Length: 266
Image (cartoon, rainbow, N blue to C red; front, top):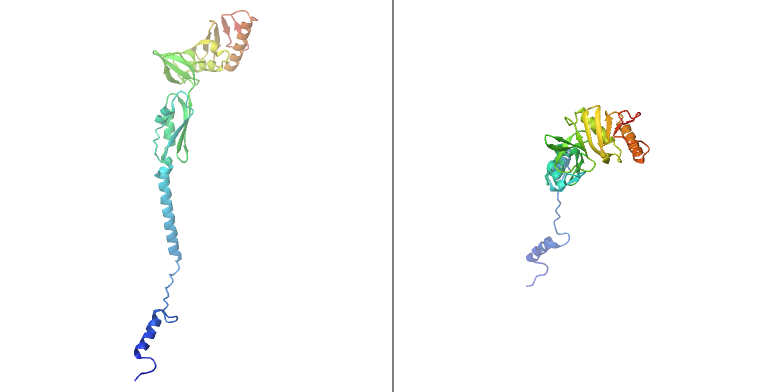
C-alpha cells in the first residue's frame, strides 16, 4: 500500500545535498589573522634590509666591473707618448676605481725624467685621468761626453745625440745642476732674454755665479755678470742690439750689461 510523505532515504538525501552546496547549508572557515610585527621584529627586519643593501653597494664599488677602470686618460704629454705615461702610472684596466692608489700612480709618473710634476685623479664611473707637466729645455750641457737637456730649474732630464731643440742654448758650466749657483745664474740669463735676442745667442758660459757671458752669432761677447736684474739686462741688451743694427751706435765686439744702468760698449 503506497505511503505518502518522504521516506527515510529521502530525509537523508536532503541534508547531504544541502551540505554540498545549498545556500545556508555550507561551512564558513575563518583564517586567523597574523599578529602585527612588534617593535623588535620590525627593527630586525629593517636592519637586515639595510645590511643587504650595504653589501650590494660594497660589491658594486669594490668588486663590480660597473665601477672599474676602462680608460687611463693622459693630459699634458708632449714629448712623452700616452702609452709611456700609462705604463709608468701602472693602473691596470679592470681595477675597481675606488682601489686605485692615485698618489702612488702620480709619484710613478713624476719619477719620469721628463716630468716636472703629475697628478692622478678618478673620473667616475670608469676613468683615471693622468695630468702632467713636462720639463721644458732651455739649455744643453755636455758632461762626460753626454749631452743633456736642462730645464729652467737646472735639472738635467734627458740626453740627446743630434741637434738641440729650437731655442735651446748650449751652456758651459763646471758642475751643472739645480744646486750649482753658476748654473742658476746662467739659466736666469737665458730665460730673461727677449724673443728677438734669444736666437742670436750661440753659447752661454758661466765660470761662477757672478760671471756669466753670452756669445752672439756675429761673435759679439755680452758680459752679463750675475743673475741680479736679469729682466732689466735683457731689455737693455735688446735695445742696444737694435741701435747697433740701425747704425746709431758704433760697432762693438763686447757689450757689458752687468750694470744695466751703465752699459759699456768696447
